[in-house]
Image 1 (cartoon, rainbow, N blue to C red):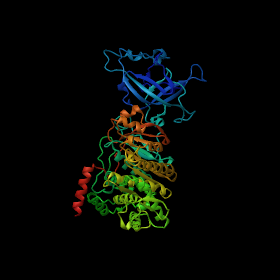
Image 2: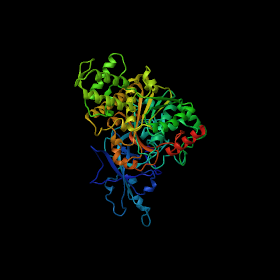
Image 3: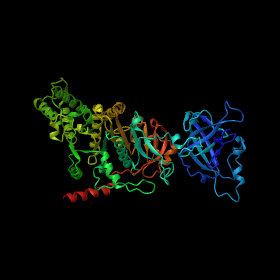
Image 4: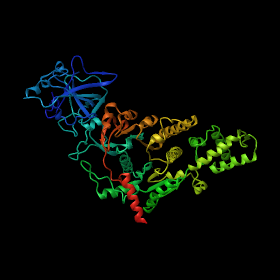
Length: 610
């Protein structure tokens, strides 16, 4: 028998916790097993979600006195303490050699117990067997049978040892050696290596991923914005040819434009320090910045956003003030939820008039549509009026309702006279080699929704030209809602078309390397099509009730509920990690402060300019 098959006495192990009434089994719920550790303090790695190894032996095809080691990989899904004086069951029935006698620890105990044994419940995911004569190479398979009485549970080593054939933590987690650094792995409140600096980095290997869409969930204060900024930074650092488009619905993403008066997050504890040179170099990683700011008729909002615009221009940021054009909509129906009318026929009339203008080579702008309605009302005094282009008749009241609806749409479209006269769609400004920020903080919810809806449509039309682009949509539940409560059935059709547009963009965009980064605080309000299209999922601090909408395993949701800033679970099957892995994100060398501090900085910087 080889020496490597001897259990390492320096590794603390837990023993099978089963008896004749509760054997280990495999069923429709998966492969579950329980192990007991006499002194839990000797296993400081114990935590829900932690990865474990179970060493077992096979004797098939070998002599009666020989065996071959193999391993189970799994994850802790439950922990409980038991009294040493009143155990619920014993594993003695299944012990098969003297080395594994559970009474051995009792021989060294003197006096009263000062601790309680702990039962570790684990979900087993796969079997691992070392390939013949290949150190560190393992063959994986599904669980074939429950662990035996020979088995022992222990925590895998972080680094490979020449005398230990067992898989390391990186082997179990299938962690990549290259890609985007999203943080450090660790299943407690600090990552592995926090005291030595020998971290295990979670690398997201986007070069090997066919589907790079990612879905991020986190409550306010969970560190979601910092994660998004770091993700954008890592994407650009990985390849300067990658384009970034970020929607800024709360104003904090725009801090990336102001590296002179917005500081990076101060690091402490285990966090790697950030030098001023790192901070200056990171600005170059993002490349050129473009700020796109929609026009609005809200005078107060315009006054508020002008400070951001002026400061950005002073810093050589390419600022574009643009307005959506009604003529660029795929159909007037896309704006139907904004119509301030109860007439179901008004949208049909506007649609017919728009088709008539387009067939004659004229843009279907709000002003042209209103002019056309006014002319028809003036020239006809009858209760019903026929449209000359298609011969369809509508009641006079429908024309009046359509005119009122078009006047209401002036709050959302055609505010830029110069843009109306241009040949290209103003949204073509998003085709930019660098980092583009769409500033939406000064808009109301209806305005934000329309801008994001039209950006989705534009991206789908331009997908072939937008290769190697990563588009960040924050508060994704607003543009792809689970359902649209209230309103008319026609409004529901608008959101059904929006979901269809998103699905087409998600499915076909990835063929052209157009990738979506979708984040939300409210996954319960998000249509399930989003996580379906995003194989990589990140869950930060979240209420357990909401965690189910992110498809986070139930036992891990309670852990996520207690996360501090920057901690998250990640599941990325095509990156080699089909199981949820706990990661502690790093503080990136990018500008980030609270919005209160940022607004004060904007005011101070503006005063300095004046």
